Amino acid sequence: MKIIHTGDLHLKKFYKGSLPLEISNKLLEDGWRALGELFDFSNEVDADIILIAGDLFEREFFNLKDLNRFLDLIKCVRAKVFLAFGNHDYLSGDNLFLKVDLPDNLYIFKNELDYFELSELNTRIYGISYDNYSFKRDFKELDLDEKFINIGLFHSDLKDERYLPLDIKFLKKFNYVALGHIHKREKVLENTYYSGSLIPLSFKDKGKRGIIFLDDNKKIIEFKSFSKREFISLEIKVTNEMRFSEILSLIQEKIEKNNLYRINLSGNNKHSLDLENFLRENLSAFYFEIINNISEDDSEIKIKDEFILDLLGNFSNSQIESDARELSKKYILEQYYDI
Image (cartoon, rainbow, N blue to C red; front, side, top):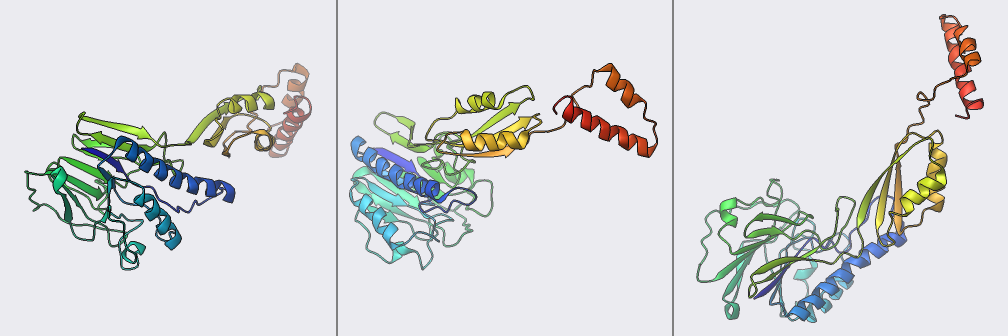
């Protein structure tokens, strides 16, 4: 038996913040591309089961046209597809999936724990869908028939009471548990995994994303990436001695064309705003944003000219002359030392 475990696709995600519309639209289409490639992969390896562990879509923005697009993809895949809805696509009465005829190979879980039995595979798939954004149930009394291969499909945060927390003893009852909600791939127990999101969705999603593929015949569990791009944070430290062109080259050589970058500038530079504007005008990337934490503090610059030091030393410590000394020092640094 071959199983694909995925989740947290967030189709029709609304990208908040400063992303231009053109970039947002490309990221939205990335999700559909990855889903299509996932189904192509399923057919290539002749998978038996696809498990989608919730947050397939964003319910505020997902419309009937989107649903039909999804169902057309489902019709092209040979595997049986099981879907448990999560907190972003929860199965209340207005969920579009309840208003259309579903393909024969698509199975959706309702709001009470249930299972679908695949007698030809001697397997039962257990799952449950949220009926609102926050969802909790108690499954401690569940007894599984050990004559079957028992698989669990849940959208759960094991550390947050709002999102279907599951007891470790409950999880251990299954042969395999496919979890969604956490976007980072993670092994929870020997039989329990988060697949992570299908593709990276924000700067919180570091690294590549994809699916978990299980081949029971070969006794393997492996990760397969479906990331076309990554969200990457770059830490760039600058100094007063570095030329703008040098800093630009340092950053540009780290940039790959398909990725999105958050560039965190730190260190010291007397022209930090000019540098930031220079980078915005000259950097080339699919998308980048700049966080400017550069200090313009000139306290490290020492006046070494003895004549100027003597001049500044002639000021008394009265408030007026002390202020005059600081103004003179600032003027000298700006004019004489070009600070």
